[in-house]
Structure formats: structure tokens, C-alpha cells
Image (cartoon, rainbow, N blue to C red; front, side):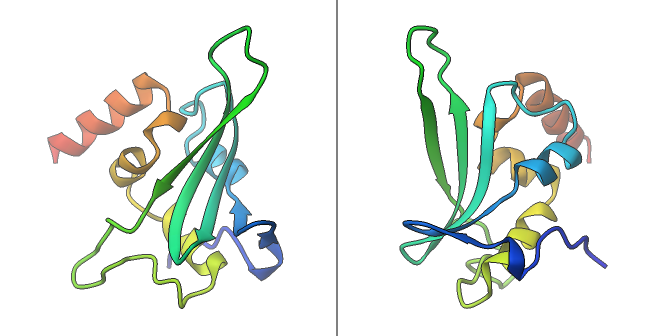
Length: 128
């Protein structure tokens, strides 16, 4: 059975529907996320599924958070396309995301990970 990370009570709304997944990502990828990452969210917005990575700016004189959205619609598994069907609940899709293989996760949100983590996961993927 796949791990269940989120439930309906975890859904947040604003200008879009999202679930905060930073804590779960930090547990799953302990020591692999960049130090300046402040939030990672799974988002349903405009009929698309996204990962939102929020980081502190790398530029010292800029005291802002940088937000990047990564569209997940390119992910397909077998005949399931798109993998994150928006007719499913957001917490169902957020759980699907956290149960992706490590290599796909790195491809989706590489800016959240250290270069060492990217290299290690990439090397392990290509050994298979």
C-alpha cells in the first residue's frame, strides 16, 4: 500500500487550492532540500496540477521570497495521462505526488533540491 501523507483536512484555499507538502518532502528527502526553501505546495489551479517551490532569494540585498510553479501535466504512467487527474481530490493527488519515484520528483522540482541530491538520485536512476 502506498503511504498516505494528506487528508481532506489539509486542503487550504486562497487564490487557488493547495496543500502544504514541505514537511512531508523534508521527511522523505531528509538533508536533500536546499536550506533556502521555505515552502513546497501541491496546487490545483486553472485546471492544472502544480508544485510550488517558495525560496528565500539567493541575492543578499533582496529580502523577498521567490515562487516558482512547476506544471505536472507532462507526467503520465502507462495509459494514465495526465497522471494527476483533477477530478480527483487535491489530497489524493498530493499523496500521488509524494509516492512518485525519486527521479521523477527531482525532474519536477529540481530547484528545491541540493545539487548533491540531484546527482545522487540521477546516478541511482541510471544504474537500473
